[in-house]
Amino acid sequence: MTDNNLGAFSSGPRYAQLAKTLFNEIKSGKYAVGELLPTEFELCAQFGVSRFTVREAFKQLVQQGLIVRQPGVGSRVISRESSTQYTQTMSGITDLRQYASETTLDVLTSNLVEINDDVARMLGVSLGETWLHIEGIRSLEKQTFPICLTEVYVAPRFRSLLGVTGPLTRPIYQMLEEQFDCRIKTVHQEIQAVNLTAAMSKKLQVPARTCGLWIARRYMDERDDLVEMAISIHPSGRFSYRESFRRDWQIKTGK
Amino acid sequence: MTDNNLGAFSSGPRYAQLAKTLFNEIKSGKYAVGELLPTEFELCAQFGVSRFTVREAFKQLVQQGLIVRQPGVGSRVISRESSTQYTQTMSGITDLRQYASETTLDVLTSNLVEINDDVARMLGVSLGETWLHIEGIRSLEKQTFPICLTEVYVAPRFRSLLGVTGPLTRPIYQMLEEQFDCRIKTVHQEIQAVNLTAAMSKKLQVPARTCGLWIARRYMDERDDLVEMAISIHPSGRFSYRESFRRDWQIKTGK
DNA sequence: GAGTGGTCTAGACCACGAA
DNA sequence: TCGTGGTCTAGACCACTCG
Image 1 (cartoon, each protein chain N blue to C red):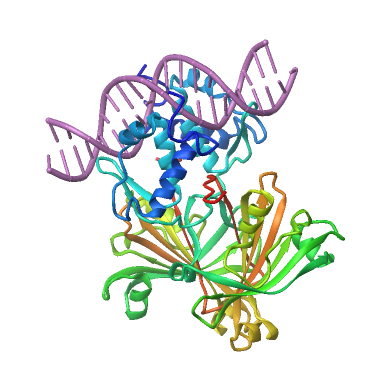
Image 2: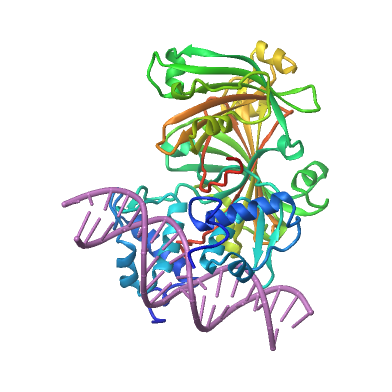
């Protein structure tokens, strides 16, 4: 069956045409947010294509953050608009790491703390929980200048984490994954520009009143529970954050 | 053929096991950077799996930036290490846009300029080229405070771009794609913290000596040629940059 | 012309969720 | 128990690259 409802109106692979069709239908509200799309088999029948084609189309919708898929349930619409034009991060990395493969984190303090008001709000957890709190300075191997000040909060269920003393060469989330068989699934990142305090400037060995990048990362597991939060402060000039995005689908609404 | 060389050593889907195997072989240097991996059919035979399984495994390697694939050529190793632990940006968006669907760019100046030394270095192009240069202020619809100062350079072949006057509600790269049938494939982004100059502070209506986020984006087409470069300066406090990453493969080297 | 990856079909079995 | 999406097979045709 080479003829179907898609070929007449578009060009490109059939799964892309199908993805575009579904994209437009979601956008138009034919399938409301929270609803289930037709099943794979239903779409196979509706459009006269194989399951492969339907699944490839669904993959594009998932990548755009329009739907989520659950085995045994179906494909649920979670948004009417694609969250971003570009997906597929190729590299989200500091330019420092591009040239120096290794950095080390010198742990200054590491102890259990009861979460106070400010921190509770920042972490989005209840007051009174006891988290593992780690402070340190990260630097390049063969360089005396520090790259950043780091502050890490580890969730109570993982606070017995071992080995957080001295210079660390592996990220803390990796140690968590190994020791507790927990799997980081998602990372939320926020970046701001901040003025360095006098204390920070001194520790980072930069002149007073310079500014810096404030980068907060929230590491979430499969159930979207916060596992770790890390806050880094990088002095300006000595550091810039680089990343690349690739566009890997081609839904052109116009034209 | 349910038995193959993969099942005995790992768990999970076969394509993930195969991906891990190839991942380790690339890391170990069995396939050097620049070399071609075995073809899909060869791997089908070697591991006793179908082409589907091999292709799914290859997809994971592509996502990690380890290989590139070319029809008619093969799968070439481009790196021995995965460029980042996480791919699949879910959203790379400012928190402002999350709540306000639209921002507008008020164009202040728009004219052709001959590239001088500094700019040439920044753009990575030769001196003397004539680019379209646009300056503007971006702000939210129902808010008087500007979000950022923006400076855009458009490549000579697109400098006849129309409609860059007055308030713009669509991104410039989108206008380029429409008017010139050019397709943006990749975006490289760099973020720094900077001190705002007095002029900037005034235009952004913030106190002097505050700091800001400096965000530069390079838009590249399919041939990796620079199409547009945009530089934005966002005042601190009024703006933070947020994004999320999802991990969608599970190559655990240890264990 | 031979071989590559990209697309596509028509089947199949499985684990899991919901009724 | 039944239907879902996840995995997998064994074919097929195509456009493209390269010798």
